[in-house]
Length: 465
Image (cartoon, rainbow, N blue to C red; front, side, top):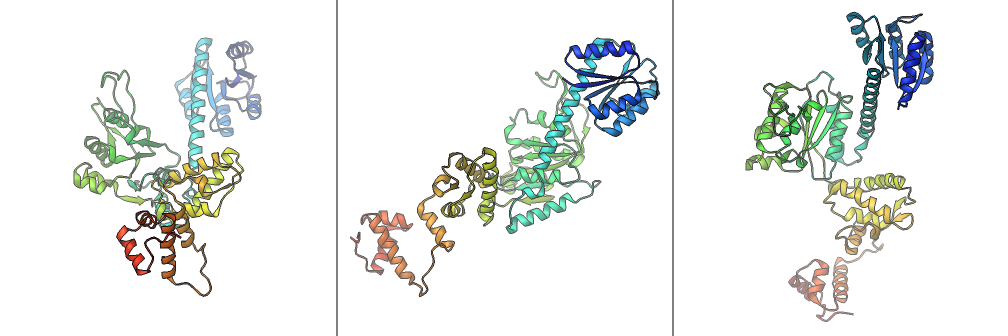
């Protein structure tokens, strides 16, 4: 229910309106003058104002203008027995939600109030989610210091700095699955000239082929069996803003042709419609598929591919980002530990080496999910390599990463590499109890290569101790 301020100088009417609205659960306050209305509004900040057009000390339109100065988002319903076209137009221009004619029918009043409050709540929800999305899409959310990420940020800054009246270029974001292409698209929108407008995210792979055209372009009533009413598509929903087409390579050739037409002509035609509708949107597409190969194979339109390639962005895979792996891992650890109120605060040395040694086929998404799981099931306040549970990770891989990172120091006098190689072969033979095939597997060698090296270092075939 909502809080309502009734500004009405007719005592009986104000009393009846108050009683009617309180019966359906609203909190109602009454003011009989414009001055009292302004004072009450500043204190209570009501969800809705019912405002009479004529008041003893001021005109209702003047009070409306003052209320909108105090709160540009306030919802106001005007009431009057002296309606005129000029007054109605002026009230709507000043921001009134609706115009109610006296004498008021209380049932109609209740419906008007509920409708206005419902729309106000919906606007607040939209604003909340828009602001939350925007706050999580700052340029700083693209974490990383490696050269490919710096280049990516520089290109994004260039695109975001375009003037508000510039025609927005189409953007194609490439990169493996899990690298953060969706984040890049949101950063582009919420830091660019269209930040206050809609950002519509579409997973093209998740829409059934028989519905994709209706979802993207909308449809008219009766266009197909279940079309009992017309509906705008996602292109229309993104008007003035950004439409993000994720996994665009999954769309069929006919739909690709219609998207190309929409990009070039800035018009779409809903299913079953006889005329096109204008749309003003920026298209941002993303794919982990090789679109150039798909064009050669005939599964993706070449003209659409080049139309999307106006401003290409490439998100690097995690395995090529060097020290960014540990930077991202610690960032995720801090966030997830706060989320779960967990005492876990850092990684052990072995865990850090394991993170660097792993190839990350799932990229940043895999890294975050892995740390999420590790924090949930970790004992103590540190995450070790075992707690990470990296798939395919072996102690040998961690030891190799430790050696590469300089964790094993050479003696001052140095060593002979041949002695190290001989020692590794003997250690593998001992671990394999003299089984040369198993020893070769442990060293990543073929059996013949192992035998050659055993002969080279005069290692006996039964060297197990």
